[in-house]
Length: 519
Image (tube, rainbow, N blue to C red):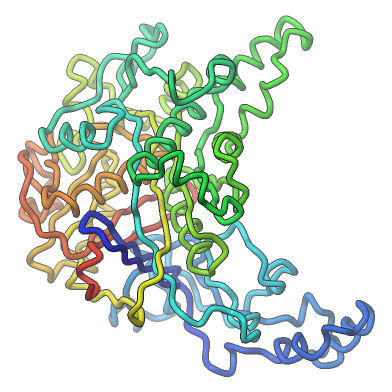
């Protein structure tokens, strides 16, 4: 599945993402069931079932056949390496991040009832082509364009301020002030100071909602403002074709924790919002209700890769012609005692408390773990029809000359990702790699969206931010590929933004300036 975009503005950015899967043969592409689907519209349910079973030799669920999806949660924007394809026992699926090889599976995936109907699915997969038998289905490739950006972070709550601070190498990591953490071995984070939702969120909601919701709504509305969606423009929109997919890894952790503490006294002390406002979908829902948008509205939670999956799914809705405009991204606010304590228990946090701005140091020999961050990032995606024919935008491996890596500053994961990148792009002499986490820390479910904002700004400005604290590069990395301690001028052809999540929810999204695809 390929997503591309064009828009009549030099600041707009197109994006591409792909799901790793075996390409079906023409015979597999439209199974017998598709022919049946066309000829049985007027039959009863029982007749349809019997007809289906007679044609396919079994029950409808066990016989329906679709694509061979080998690695649903991995993304690959290019063809796999030949040496990888030729490895024994390995499928043609390719994981950018060096995850465990997937053995060849000959049995095709069965498709659920919802996927057979062609209805919207909350999964980032290629639309099943056997349902596209109706002549009314769109035949023209719709391109997706990023037209607005919104961010709430420890480095600023305005996109330009945020990116200028990144370019200057300013760290947003400091001592935690929101609560007393003197007894914790880690006492630093990329904490947002003096956050205010005034003018963006109603006072009533501000008092009730978790910070992740407040960050999300503010960043979402800022993305609309950045994209020129004024009140007048908003009134002209077809709100049934405007949607919101903004996820969260941990949701309303503070609201839930408060509910647990109240329960220790009595269930009567619990806030009636302690459950609904703790869920990961509530931020996306509340923003959609605030805007009056009635298109697709849900959230995806795939740990630290949450934002990328939300962006991809939002773009898919536009590509399939279901929506014209989408807000997408991620938000998290887990810098509270249970969040900090939980990651300390995992043994994954840096303990460089005396020098917080030096704590997050991806690929550096002195790294000792990641630093928690918080905030939200939101992208406004749109589709705009172009008068010319829209050819599919193919991306060659050598075109990718900038990678915003997931690199969290943990001893093993940084090297694993670096090795995978080098294996794929090692021959590209122009390649530059950096990690936004060196200044923000790890924003968990919001990381991918905030880093996507940084990636888009790199394309717009022609500047990529430094890898601060990369003072002693690890012996296993080539420092010539990594951005140094100062920002660099780069004409970004195509950029890749990586997000890796607990459980193997790994994803990558490509971004590029619209002029690079021929307009």
